[in-house]
Length: 479
Image (cartoon, rainbow, N blue to C red):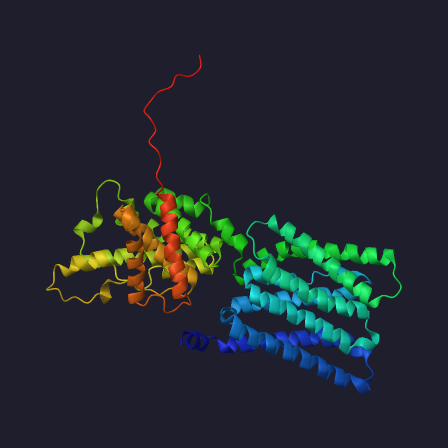
């Protein structure tokens, strides 16, 4: 039911327009350069074959995205980032026909490298596969005067698929750039292995010189792919307003301007955010979500409290509480507006969309119980809580759901101070949010929620560990 509702919200007109534009562009790029290579009697057939190939491959990509990674199809930004990456990868492969050994220099996994960072690993692999198949089918279709040898046909298909698999599913995503030097080295080794297999299968006259050139170029292709990735990822982040783990890693630090402002204006909120980040990062890693994205979301989830820091208990250091002289309704409005204020600040500083979503969603539509019960004292006990709730929306992804649980758990555990009652406190917080249907808009499972609860308990135990008491003895230093 949830998936059906999610699919119904897709902007179909944008999706169809995007795929039609991609089809037209690829058709022009594959047919026009080969227009003069065929005799008129065969030209129509080859054009029809090429158009059918493009149509079928793009249809397969659309179906795969629809059923396996619909979040990409729901985002116009990610769809166009994917198509642009595919076009660049396609052009690089086509340019390799200008030199005999250039095919070995091609970074076949470029699509997977870039898209696994800014879109998703699954779509990165399939988009990479579509481009490899398109180039392979084009080479076969126009083969009467093709510049690629049979060996290179095989190398293109075999090496391209193997490299894409390794990048998307084996090598993984890292937020430390130095790790990608290792990734480039591994890709180079894989390319050399693919080139060696291709050369042995199709070359009858072994030549160490030819093989050496092919092997050297193949190894260099891994490094070239990483270099292009480092150039294109920041560019695409800016153009398409998407974020990679590099971007999240850059903002998930306490020494940037926005976090320094939070420390100066709302020091209690600042320290709360750092502690929540410890919980959220551990929970995200435990269920296979991006830990660095989770940490960034936790760092900024309460930045809206900078607007009116004294209205939040963690920033009330002088014993003065402004809410003592306010009506419960006015207090509720002041409290719940910190999510809207936070979203405005996040947009001003151009924080990633995922962080913006966490800011506005981390309280969902939960009631603000303290002021609801305060208002209840002035009634006969019959007061609907609808007017005392956050405006939402509810969490739409697992990171926001984790943040919702960890944010409330950190506050409750800090307020309780009872180390023997940790499990009950966390269980009650999760049960309350389930009772208020806060997780209905995201695909988090009860198994994952159980993992999150146990991770919070383990993390809390580590944070509040015991230390020995040091003797109050003064030692004299050497004279």
